Length: 288
Image (cartoon, rainbow, N blue to C red; front, side, top):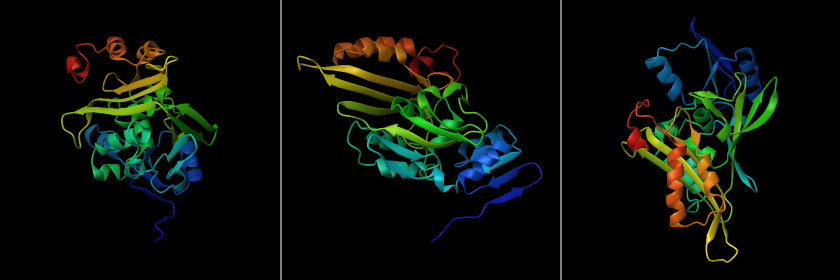
């Protein structure tokens, strides 16, 4: 069955809805209306309109653009189309080996919102919305993922997810830019990545604290233990944006992978993630 649609425009006088069906049309619309909001899952825009009384003169549908959907696996990375439903990504990653990036994504997405939301929500929606308590943004940042971004005027560029979040709900994307895909490196031998999510209940709940944690090891010269050759730790719910723990990663570099190293790293991590007692959202001691 061919479910493709022709582009159309609908307006009620105060808001105009554009529904393009090609990336070229989408880029043209973003050039003409840089402040127009792209809508895919609508979970964020719907909340803003209903509960925050926000008004949008232009909304742009992103669901029917084939170039922004799909999953492919290259030799060294996975490429996820920006608007690929999270449920498709979860199915693709299901059965990933313990510690691999597919295992981590599958386990994080298992508890991501509800089935209905996963069927429409996308990685690009998570990234562009830039929620400080996002489940997937810390996972992507820890996995050293990058975004391919495109605009009609500037062409195509790439940016690391870890460098994307500048302030509360503010990203490095320019108003006329569109996320085309998300590229996630495959985990190599002795490289492990794991998700973490703490919420009030297991299913269909927003996070209190969420994290992606990646460590790459190598055998020591004497073969008696492993040493840390690379690591990255990213957290949501610990600041006004998704944050990294750079001092912890620097501390772990070339350290032996032992319980003693882990205990020392925990102390450094506490310094990477300070929370004042009057932090918005409360529960600072619990979150720490």
